[in-house]
Amino acid sequence: MAAENPVTERPLINISDPAQRDTLAPWTYLSSEFHALESELFKTHWLLAGHISSLRERGDYITYDAVGERALVIVDEEGEVRAFHNVCRHRGARLLTESGNCKHRISCPFHGWAYDFNGSLRNVPLPETFTDLSKEEYGLKPLPVEVWQGLVFISFSTQAESVAERLKTVTDDVVPYKIADMDAFAPGYDDLRPYNWKVIHDIDNEGYHVPVGHPSLQQLYGLSYSDRIEHGIPISDATISDKPAKLWSVRNYQKLLPHFDHLPEHRQKSWWYIGLFPNAVIALYPDMVEYYMTIPVSVKETRYIGQQFVLADDRRETRAARYLNNRINAETEAEDESFVLDMQEGMRSSVFPEPTLSSTEMGVHHFHRKIQSSFPVARLRDEPAEGTLRAVNVRLEGGG
Ligand code: FES
Ligand SMILES: [Fe+2]
Image (cartoon, rainbow, N blue to C red; front, side, top):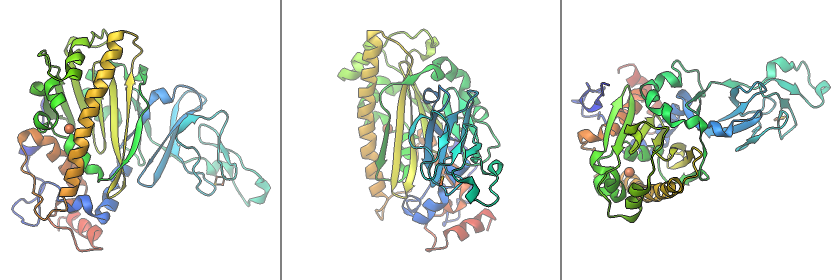
């Protein structure tokens, strides 16, 4: 498969223009005006909203909130997965919260308007008090939804390309994991973190920091780790080392990890990761699969959400491997959290550098350029004057 290297691609911008740069400047992580603009990314892309294990039965639902939009995903009477804006057509109340099962209808907690699982408005209390209320016109507003390999994606806008089409470069490799047959392992997390959402992706889009920043990962797979971009999808691939690690959790993970008959031989010792622009990562291990994602709340606050999934497997070695996997990843995450906090803080420094990127940090470049290609104002070295950002962006979109 041909891999792209965005570092060597022709630059999007005029590099010789001293006002522009081909990585994101610190102001794009600190500006509320830019935050308001880039939030559009979350309205124009497919977003990972959950896993099919929460949507097995009629009436099962999940909810998803991002950048002011609210979605609900529900299994209808025919077993079909549907998505709607989680906004009552009467006065906008939130219809469903978190996840669960609707026994009968989707019933609004405010005044009791009730909708079928296919979104049709069925019941309005005191209907005679409304003038010309046609129930046919007040069904829930539908949203695009797609289930790919057990992962549920929604979008707040019409999508030209399906998730399956976008991810076809990895599909054959993902199918053997049987993600759709998995169930949630440990309780998921949904934490509010004190930094801009992009910082976390700057760090997880490159493995150049693994040898120094992540001793556990380095001992587990460091020498084999590599990043690449395939058809626009960032992929990181690593193989568990045969050399016994010094660290207890890594050494025992290496020793106890059993054979998984559903996986091909080349994935028996593989830890690999798929990046989903703008905000999610799928991590595939032999013993489990995990996803995590960021959702911006403000320019300096981010929800960090994740969940692990496993196939039923009662073997003692599998249970031990999953426990050790969690320990290794908890250490890694604590290390990354400290890098993220330091980097966010460093962006306020007057000498915060324009990154000098190694070719192994192509993922950072790719991520920045995806944002710059959506919002040309993000190519600017300096923040536009207060109140002018949108106008400057429009001017640059026009090539001005
Ligand atoms: S807002 Fe839902 S019934 Fe009034
Ligand atoms: Fe990391």
